[in-house]
Amino acid sequence: MRSWLRALSESGPGVARGLPRLFWSNASQHWGLVLFSLVAALGIWMLVEDQQNPRTQAVVPLETNQAIPLTPLNVPDDAILRDQPTVRVRVEARKADIDGLREGDFRATIDLRGVTPGEAVSRPVRVESRRGGVRVLSVQPSQVDITLVRAATREVPVQVRLVGEFPSGYRLKEGVVPSAEPSLVKLRGPADLIDSVEVATLEVNVAGLRDGVVSVEGDLVARTSGGNRVEVAITPERSRATLRIEQTFSQRALALSASVTGSPAPGYRITNISIDPPSAIVAGPKSLVDFLQSLAIEKIDVTGAKTDVTQTKQIDRPPNVTIDRQTVVVRVEVRAIECSTAQPASPCISVSYVIGPAFTDFPAGMTVEGASQVVVRVFGPLPQIQQLKAADIRATVSLTGVTVGTSTLNPVVTILPSGPPGLRAEADPLPVKIVPLVFP
Image (tube, rainbow, N blue to C red; front, top):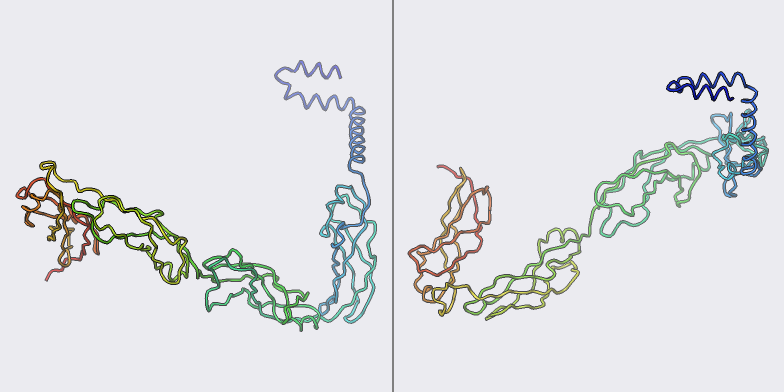
């Protein structure tokens, strides 16, 4: 061993290349020591294993409600087992392995060679372990009574059974029955059981299913006309159901819109209307809720107002729907009209004019359909307002970027130099219908 270590230390940079050669050279010279080390290590491992995870015996499966089903061998083609026998087995294995053994870890068979339909026989059971290290000691019971009967076959329709409840506001589409694919399946079993079957059912839990076409796959169950389960073979064992679901109840958040009656005091105007909260949740039939665009609020009176008006108002509820609140707070902001500083002592008033707008920037091949009028409000001291003429006001509407259809545009209002100074004008947005230009 010292010579081997000395050779290893003198290897220098070539230690990686020389290590395997040195190992096998010394192993061949000291094979007895190597063999002893391996045997000793194996013995220690087995000792530890026997202490921490000893071999023991038990009847499995451990759960009393589980058993190993029997697989019949050499059954005539026209015959079938009347009942499905099961067994349990006593095994020897490591304790950790026994705790995890299930019926699928074993294969239990019974040979029915030579047995004819209608004949009752008792045959021994053979069980094989599919898990390494597990030894079958005995079978419980070691023999079972078997009766073969004539096998019958029959096709039955697949019926979709809905269980659970749809989410609120959803249901099967009216007039559309759930379909199954395949819609027919083949049954095989004892004749009296086959005759008792009415349908093969596919259960679909509709909880959580929502709007649209939904496909659900599941196992089939043979049932009598009264809904009782019948244990027969079904081919194929699974089917896929297609459901068409529609939403009948909907809820949406809709904006609230407020309007006023009356006018503020002379020299004052409304600058803003705010609603708290600005929206409400509407719930009801989908056909009604989807049609709504906004919710109106009871009008608020601002007649003669010189300061802000804040009131609690009712929401106008459309028929056949519900709203999450009945009232909201509406605030109408009222401000004094800003007049020219040229004559600060003069009273400030407003006057409205209706004038025809001038359109500019026509898109190629388009024109404006119908006559348009713009309502212009002019603010300022009374002496200047009295001198103002409609001809002194110009409203210009640019058609840049518009397309065919109705567009809402903002007119630009100016007071011409010919008019009195110190006035301010504004106009409401103007709906304009744009149509293709037709040449005669």
